[in-house]
Amino acid sequence: MTVGDLLPRLSGAMAPAGRPLVDPHAMSLPVTAIADDSRRVTAGAVFVAVLGHRRDGTTFAAEAVTRGAVLVVSGSPRPLDASAPWVMVEDARLALAELAAAFHGDPSHELSVVGVTGTNGKTTTTYLLAAIFDAAGVPCGRIGSVGYLTGGRDQVAERTTPEAPAVQALLREMVEHGQAACVMEVSSHALAMRRVHQTRFSAAIFSNLTRDHLDYHADMATYFATKQRLFEMLPPGAPAIINADDLYGQQLAAGVERPVTYAIDRPADVTPEGVDSTLTGTTLQVCTPRGRLRIRSRLPGRLNLYNVLAAVSAAVALELPFPAIERGVAALEGVPGRFEVVSVPEDGVTVLVDYAHTDDALRAMLGAARQLCDGRIISVFGCGGDRDAAKRPLMGAVAARLSDLIVVTSDNPRSEDPKRIIDEIRLGIESSTAPGAGPPHLAIADRGAAIERAIQEAESGDVVVIAGKGHEAWQEIGTERRPFDDRLVARAVLARRRAETRVS
Image 1 (cartoon, rainbow, N blue to C red):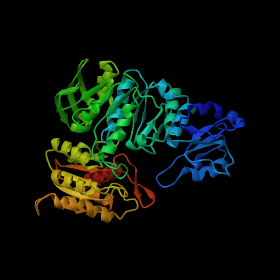
Image 2: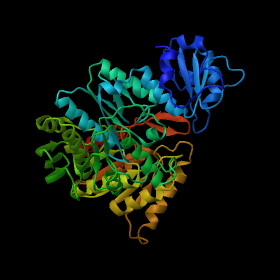
Image 3: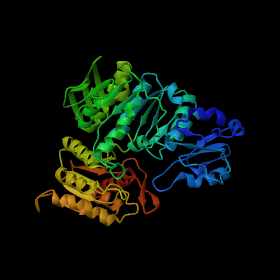
Image 4: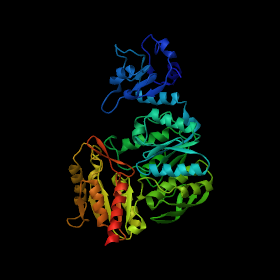
């Protein structure tokens, strides 16, 4: 592929007055990659200088050229000392998506791509739908916060939805490895930054919308409008799978061409009947416009009931066979760090690890645990540093209402003082109930020590919920990423507890 092959895909390109977009000799230059990070530029790459939160990529254009970039695309005009062909565009992020899709041959047109967006439930829904596709004989890749599965490899995710060049490269890799479908978590950041523009979606799923990322989005209205962009990208006739129990979902359903709604509490196209849920799983019937399904899932709780309904609704709308839908849901054993049981029956207590890191997600998680619990709920959680601080007391208030014992600890403190974050959470705990009426709570900044204390405090029949980090195998402290996995820590504590019990 050459520079001349790529340029027709650029929208908003601005040629200098009276001159061609680029010098004619540059049109035949071969292109080897599309890059938005000057450190990853190799010989023959096109460097797209995007405007970041802290820095303007244009300042790194000279470095990119030194590394071998054959073309620079930027929202800024060409500097006088620029030594490589330069194209100015109206929107550099859109240009990045356009060039990435063109360079990789528009792989989304060769796959059935389903985008999943919403605040909670994205990861589990993608796992469920991928399992259904596979059961239907449609090999399925997956892109999301846990990892990227392409058919050729399964790699740890750098972010929920990667930048446009990585998205298109992953989709092309799926095609080359015989995948016929892809389920992709689409974050609000990805939509705002146009990471999935130029991707053709066969369907989209909206799980819910609750407070999150308000350090990035100005308010909930902006957050919702950003999520809505995914549904505006759907081609004519593509189904929009929407949670009708969610107020934002109801608003979204009113404005899409082909809504397919699901709900537990309201009338919808897809609804459950005869739900029976325990810590070992859930059984139910699902009523759909195509008939009834008998669903048996190993995923417990109301949270996972919504995820099952979302995946089943999408599969039904995409006309996948009912037997494959039932087999696919039944085949999924679990999702890393999502309502994941890390204890064993002989522990006498249940320990759950979950990614819940917002007040609504924590409310749903603790509520689901309460429904499945005969004893006390002991919650362990913190809040991330350098992120939306307003949710800290909100999460504390939720824990105070739904827990019997709270252990407040560090999450990923990043550059903030962990003690300050904990104090802000405790304000919510202490202000949400009358003095002396709320549950006891402990503040232990060391997350490993907090998990150990919570499990030590647990008695037979209790459930310990460790929330916030889920699948993450690290903890961000200062500028470092230190190895830390809630699941490994909890299992080690439980093993010591079992050993001490045998000795005693």
